[in-house]
Length: 52
Image (cartoon, rainbow, N blue to C red; front, side, top):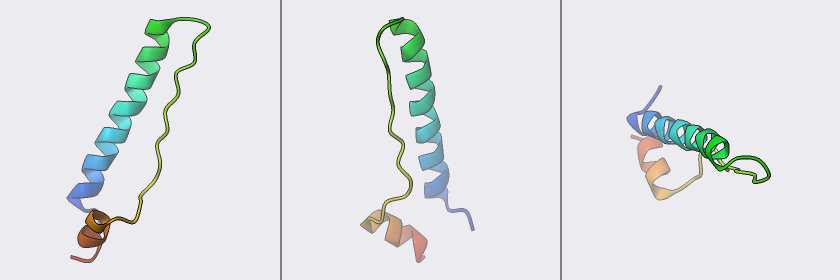
């Protein structure tokens, strides 16, 4: 079952990845641009959505 929170998280992760790609092209050669995109983290918000 897909919950609305997962869709929002997916959108944000995609935006961050695209911003990283664009930034690396704009900055140019010799400078690395990295992103970290972790998976789900067990937090109160995650547990509330998971068990509703």
